[in-house]
Image 1: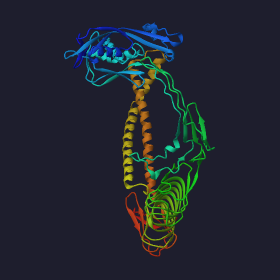
Image 2 (image 1 turned 120 degrees about the vertical axis):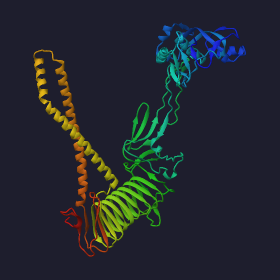
Image 3 (image 1 turned 180 degrees about the horizontal axis):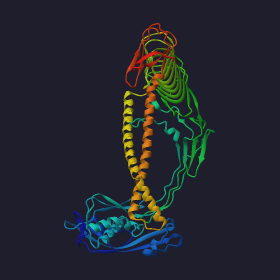
Image 4 (image 1 turned 60 degrees about the vertical axis):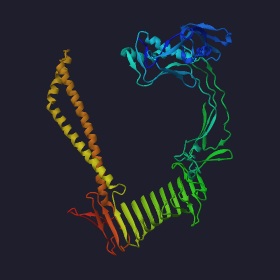
Amino acid sequence: MALFESKKSAVTTSPIPSIVVRTSNVAKELISVADNHNVSIKKLDFKILETQTFIRLLSDGDDWIELSHQEIEDITDDMYLNPKFEIKQIHEIEIFSCIESENTTILDLSIGGNATLCKIYVTIKVGNIVTYSETFERDFFELIKKKKLRANLLIGVFDSMMRSNFSELMAKIRVNKKYLFEVQERYVVAESFEPVATINDKLILHYDIKRKNMDEAGRIDYSKRGYIISVVNNDLLIEYIKPLKGEIGRNCRGEIILPKEPLIRYEPTFTVSEKIKQIDTPKNIEWRATVGGYVTFEGGVYDIKTEIDVKEISFRSTGSIETQLDADVSINVKEKDVLKDAIGTGMEVKVNTIHIDGNVGPEAKVTAHKATVEGQVHSSATIRADELSINIHKGTAYGKEIHITRLEHGTVEGDRVFITQAVGGKVRAKEIEIELLGSHVKLTASKRIEIKKLQGGENVFTIDPLLNMSRESLEKELASMNEAKKILDRSEKELLEYEKTMKENESSFEEIKKKLIYYKRNNITIPIVYAQKYQQFQLFRNKFDALQKEHTAKLNHFTLMNEEYIALQNEIFDARIINHERWNNYNEIIFKLIEPAIDVIYVPLEGSNESVLGLHEDEDGEFSIKVVSK
């Protein structure tokens, strides 16, 4: 019976006479025989007759000592990692020729290793079929030995794990008798001592890595070229990797691998200010920020500063500036010329604090915690800041507290908005306060709109509790609340059924409990039936307790959702529209109800002094807008 089955295999023949040789390099010997007999090395095969293993220590002289198999296993790791220790093998092999036959087959496997040859693998390719026989395992491992010798690797050394790694595969083949390799399989057949690589010194400017902005094609975006680099407390700014010589290894050929001497080229020569701390470890030196700000390097000294003055922010001078919002960086943009832009076209600025003496140009975007614009904001520009102050606003502004001197057809969204004069535009906020209101302004608030002086008309005042929520979002929340109510109802029904069953069986439970106590006190064997029933009662009670806890959690969840919904509906009755002067021209007031989803509209009469207006619901459930108290 053939051991390995596939398409083809090798059988011996005698075009050249068998040759017995002793060699330390089987691969070299096969090449020599092939050359001497003018045949392809692929036509040659060999049999391992004997392998001798020798070692020596150069410090003890040049005499080689032969080791037995047990003595090989006793070699210590320290010995292998001694650079003066040498190991070699002499193999006695019989070389003969072979030819391919259509009737017999070989197992198609290959041997390979990692770059250092400290880990060796055998790969068995897809499609191989093997048939089990009494000599299968012996022939299989003999084939691997021959593959290793062709690769000039040691055998019987560094391979103690080989048989255990194949144990599962051997078991499958032994049980199935015939085995098909449906996927490629790889196994470790030898593992020696991997060297530790030498580390050359390196200086890494971590803070500067942020400067390199790439687009999807890997090109540098020069509009965002990192004019300043922001950091926060404890940010890693610079790192020096110390040189470290590697550690000795030994590969599966028995060769010692000596580490290279490390290259030293980047030893630090700079100094740092007190705002940067140095952390020295055996492997590296780190320099970390102790405060927020931006990194500077002047006169060989790294420092962190917080405030910077620039003439303008433009593509030509600085490019866009992006820093961390929580870094303590403040930028003062000094360009005041009304005919120029302090923030140029298309520039993007992200910074903790920014003071702009002049104008914000077209398509510019500014993001900050605190921002001040002394000039005007272009109609296509956008500014976002928690605290925002703008002189003339024509663009789009978002913030928590916003102060605008003059609104000219711009858009404003925030929590609290204060405007000195408004001439056209849209404002959405929880609370809005305007000193002088002109015409064609749309004001939407959830709590209060207050006008000190009304000069124009065609304005729309809207109270909308869903200021920061769309009708679609509300409907989703209502759907979630309805689903929670259904789950709560099912839970309550299940709980009631369990409670009813508990009450019906309570007397039986107590009776069994008393009997069990009696049996235990009198050392009487407890009947199995009673023990089982008592256990069933206990499990039922535990389930009941768990259901109670689950029901309480669901009830609390539904109650919270319902309370939030009711509070949202009731908010509109507390909202106010306040006008400190008489109503002039045509102005429209709208209160948007949630339930029912209707708009209540009111137009104050010309010259009326209805200073405080709110939503009113009469006894018949009709809604109207009337004068109310503050």
